[in-house]
Amino acid sequence: MGNPVSAPASDTYVIEEVLTDLHVALGRENLLAQINPHYRAGSAAAGLGTALGGFHGQVAAAASVAMYDGEDTENFACLIGEEVMCGTFGGASKLPVGKKVKAVVSKRGDVLVAHGILNEDTGLVWVGHAWGRKAERMANFKLAFFCFCGVMLMVTAFTFFLNVYPGFSELETIALGAAAAAVLCFGNALLSSGTMNALADPATEVFRKLGFADPEHVNLNSYQYCIVHSYKVTHSTDMRANYASIHCYKKAIEDGKLKFA
Image 1 (cartoon, helix red, strand yellow):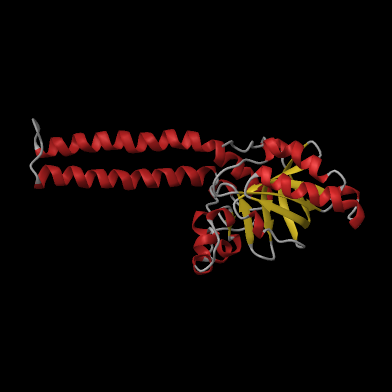
Image 2 (image 1 turned 120 degrees about the vertical axis):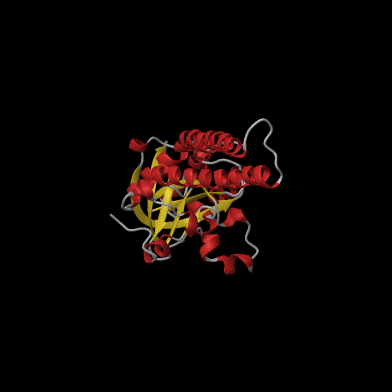
């Protein structure tokens, strides 16, 4: 399984056009196989415009960097205006065909690679990572704090209720346990924050270019499609690949958790 290549922030830009002619598949090879006969046999005859003439070839050339075959994702190719756009999102099949979208894209040859897509009509945004840089760091430290509390509960239980404190007093045992837990939990949070910046930094830039205020603090984790529409997801045949990257940004705005710049 490969990983998608993130474009440098300076290489991305915004395009606002109508999204049409959407093709979606769970794997990039499946997607190319789906597109190939459709366009080679029918694009010219259907009079769909010169932009579609090399659709398959353009997507095939970009597939190695624009798409990856992994879990919880769908690869897609479409037209945005008269340009070919492709990429990988969990839930690409729910992109609004025939509707105007705002997309943060980079250029790969003749193809646009989507890094984030927002549709005002549905109130949804497709992004690969739900946190901005500072929101990511805060989430890591919250998790570290809860882990620290859990460890301290166990240390306290072993010390006072099971009388396990070899060679030390009860308070010394708890103090040593607290020091060790703090180093492990919060040290790991620091290391994780550095690693996760590889995802959070591009996401921050996507949020900024989509127009969100304070993009570093954007946190859409609680507004995942599967959470906001839990009843609909539970009573459908959808897999996680059919919604994993979709977030309900308008619901976040209604709740006062997000706003536009």
